[in-house]
Length: 239
Image (cartoon, rainbow, N blue to C red; front, side, top):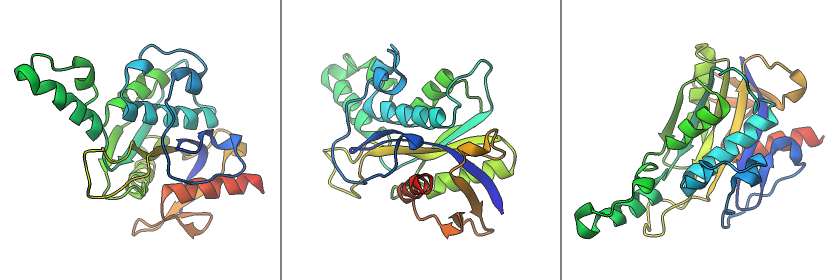
């Protein structure tokens, strides 16, 4: 059963960043994430963006690219568009940084700026404000960064008609340096715009189906993870 069309893709990885339609091929390699600025993403300075922690900037940037790719980045009235993000470590690095400001002097110098970003879903509020989104927005934890659980939830949201457009993806800044376990994660963020009924069929990369057991398919082939789905979408448009 066809549930939604993918009409936008946005990502930030150690190797590249941008919108799906800006690329013909992609490489997936580990490395260090770029230092993000609002001008790199939106072409203008956003004062609030500079105050975000690294994890929040990463998610904000990737969702912004995805909405731009789907021609949904401009708005006049708020829209019932939802966002679901998968993560392994979330804002844990920021939590650690904040805790280190709490310990000295009994918390007298605890950082209010860091405290503001000690929840993994904070960046979704920033995204909702900037792009006028009013749909469900939440972050889920995954034991590994496939993004499938979040994608499945987004498709179920479309089936239940809670929203007609959903953003689904993953965002992770990687395992904090002070941690040696449990899993190494390549840092990055990838988001897809899913439309139940695309306003412009020419923007579609292809359709997503899901069977009764929750297995997701793109163009008839099972989706194993979102990195692979992104590469398959880019390959489709280059044919």
